[in-house]
Amino acid sequence: MAYDHFKPEIWSTKILMARDLACIGVQNSWKAYEGEIAKQGDTVHIQGLVGATIKTYVNGTAIDAAENITDSTMDLIVDQMKYINFKVGDVDKIQSNVAVMNPIIQKTANDLAVVQDVFVYDLLAKSGSNRTTLTTATAANILASLGTALTKLRTNRVTGTINIELHPYIYNLIQQAVINVTLPNESIMKNGFRGMLLGANVYETPSVTITSDVAATLPVAAGTASAYYNCIIRTPEALAFAEQKAFKTEAYRPDLDFADAIKGFNIYGAKVVKPTELVQWAVQI
Image (cartoon, rainbow, N blue to C red; front, top):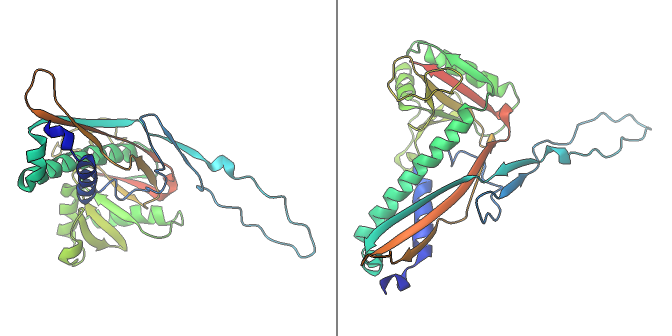
């Protein structure tokens, strides 16, 4: 049978590699704690969220007993599972025809990126952390509001990279307010990156949560009158994302069918772990 020669590692690796080129929310997250995830419901134990207390030493006196900071551990539940299942006719022929295989992998990867990014932005929008609101946004007032949101984040003494993730409608207003965000070269114009503004990286993505209320609980479609676009300003460590190391795939022959088929699944989870390194910038237009 043709599917006996199926190469799952090719499909698994290429799907996730292509996904990485398409997603924004996932790639701007903390992925250091993935570990070995085997099944849906696995738990990732995240440590190191709190540092040791800085104390003043008085010469000639004993220091305090060692403090216990193990209570800073946070659990991330891998509770999301997505799958694919489609007919391909002849697996061997598909695998040997790059012109056919690559578009299938690319489209699957793009769709997975959208699903995962929507999941990440929904968690960020509903976290209830450091929300700043701009009602009736215009090109005249949007930069001042963005500056206020960035100031709120920086007041928390965050260090390192700060990412601003904007819906295209909001990025359009930013473009009207400034001549250029920056002038990035073509080699880095991917994953929605649009350059730097006010010392932060700017990303454009249609996956941010859009709601009719400022609390981000009532989703609506883009372009809805008076909708709130829940843009996100954060460090990469604000949200942790964990998934399988591969998109598990296998080929099989469906019952009552002469065609081969491919099925596969991916499991993942995410959690806001450093809310002080996140600002939800709800912009109404």
